[in-house]
Length: 363
Image 1 (cartoon, rainbow, N blue to C red):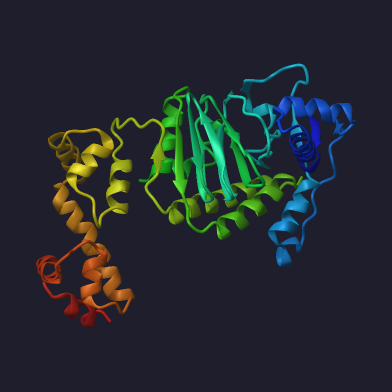
Image 2: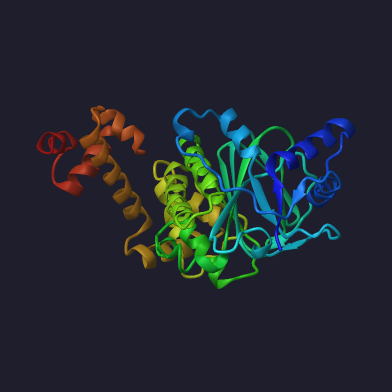
């Protein structure tokens, strides 16, 4: 049987204790206090109504509104839970559930059997992961694999949203994410193959505004009880994942990365750092010898490292020539050529014309 806790009540207890005592409570201790104060209910709250809510909604408005939402929990008041199962917190018949992560909690390393995603839309958070602590700034998106010992710590008024995604729905509801050539697809495929291997995947996005808006909409759908809500959340999650990948300002970071037969992460790194990457840097990044890395690149792409780099740069050059008015000199520099003469020579050998001729012909 579920109990229901108001988000604002939980946050008030945690903040008040910290301000009065200078120490932080663990989640179960805060739940004890809420129970003593009669602030836990076993009656399902009324469904959320938010029609037209987003027409003029500031960050402060959404914070106040979401404070009134009740989230379900199977938390046992007599236990310090270090293993959480999806049924404890993800409602029945829901594939995804979203919370605003509580602030001022004392870390308790725990594991769970679902995928957790933490998104810092304002401020920062500390990720306690296995035997390490990582500080992530605003715009960080961290995917945590099932079976990973971890906790998220927010030391101030930062805002972090936590998504909980059932592992059992990866192959069904989110099956399209498993076949793409990107880091997120690799991460999800590894979860399905290796259930208990600790791992996280971290993106850093530079503009959080659009992703934040999608997250807030998806969160409210999680608290809406009708036949459409789950489908709406799933659709929004596809948009959110796409925006995370599109907006990532740097190469994704893994806690643990095993190549196996999957080359997508190395290819993603090359595509993201094509202006400056060298074979030596790539070998150091992924702990391979240069000869072995050359073999891997040839096996997975059919071309050498230098030819792959040239293909990527030439594709980017065409984009700049067709979609901007930048001078050829600037385009050459942007895509990684120190010499515009060398750039023009490579471009002509690839496409049979000079950059200027290509721009004029395809204008």
